[in-house]
Image (cartoon, rainbow, N blue to C red; front, side, top):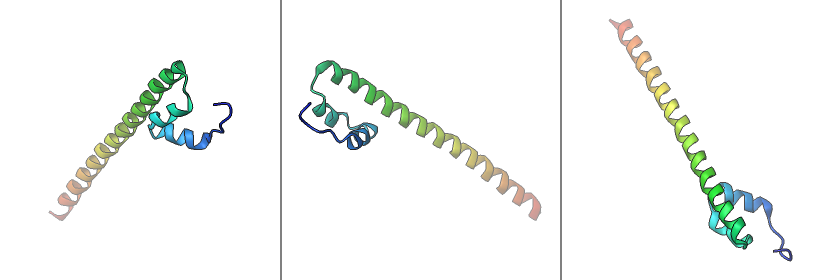
Amino acid sequence: MLDQTVDWHDLSLRIVGGDASWCFVCFNQIPIRIALQGTVHASVAAGFGAALSVAAIVAVLASLASWRLIRAAGTRSS
């Protein structure tokens, strides 16, 4: 590894994207590989969980706003 240059930007993009298998080629030591594997999987799972939670909250708020606006429009025309 010392004689190879590592493209840190590409490496970080792959880790953020959840591609842990490619990153393990750069780090051949077993303890580092085990530590990174758990960290990468946990961070990707946490990121997707947070994104889905935010999406669910936005969907609920949008449905409530739509319901209220449609209900208000129906009472005005009567």
